[in-house]
Amino acid sequence: MTVHEMTLTRLLDAPADTLFRCWTTPELMRQWFAPKPYTTPVAEVDLRPGGASKVVMKSPEGQEIPCPGQYLEVVPGRKIVFTDAFTGDWMPNVGAPFMVATVTFEPEGDKTRYTATVRHWSEADRKTHEEMGFHPGWGLCAEQLEALAKTL
Amino acid sequence: MTVHEMTLTRLLDAPADTLFRCWTTPELMRQWFAPKPYTTPVAEVDLRPGGASKVVMKSPEGQEIPCPGQYLEVVPGRKIVFTDAFTGDWMPNVGAPFMVATVTFEPEGDKTRYTATVRHWSEADRKTHEEMGFHPGWGLCAEQLEALAKTL
Image 1 (spheres, rainbow over the protein chains, first blue to last red):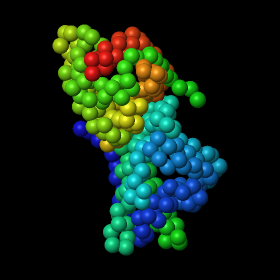
Image 2 (cartoon, one colour):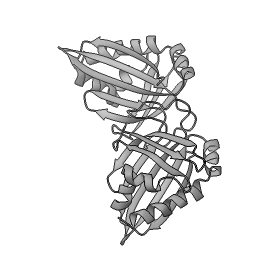
Image 3 (tube, each protein chain N blue to C red):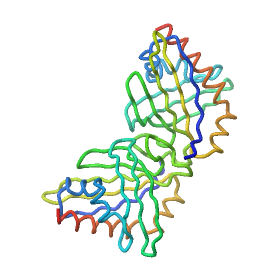
Image 4 (cartoon, one colour):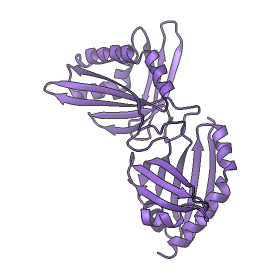
């Protein structure tokens, strides 16, 4: 089967549970979720399979970028799967869905193997995501995530 | 929010648990799942959120119609949500997804209120589904389902 995916992985200097908390707690998400100088003014989290995730990012010029989505699978402290295909309680997000993201947090000694995999419904979407800057963008966010987690 | 949905509901003369069993047990699914004279030669069920559902229907002329999909939510005896958007473990089903189906079984006295709702990512897909015969097709299947459940 063809899988239109990209993966980013980093060994982060923070505990898995703390990183998971940064990924799933609104007031923490607002501090690291968008690659700077973008910001995250809105983060709403209903952390359960079928629960809505409402994130709004904001560009330095003030343009708001809504990112509605839904959690598909949640393993506390270890794994989150989410997508823009639904907006909560399995309601289709009108228009073609773009991606499914799986984020895992695996303890490695006193650090954490952080892995984010994005999968798409088409190769065109995967390529668009790559050109939007998946690798540098998620890489920068991983650094912001680690920096925040080290303060907690 | 615009929701591109259609609903079919019937009061069926069988217990909710039995109808649920007909919907989720391969050897029972093969007996009623496709509207006759279509048949269901293949039904594979991994009944859990993220579990694959592989059904193949067959036309009277012998053409096989694969229907790969995945369960999203399962409430034993009462509710099933599934979609063709994934093929198992949240892998995108390459190509645009077509629908999300929610099937509920609510006891009403000694009968069951059976309700199937299909939602689509676009109005075009909803219309296509209607023209494919959603209402007569799912209606006929509901009769087949009830007839089988009454023998169990």
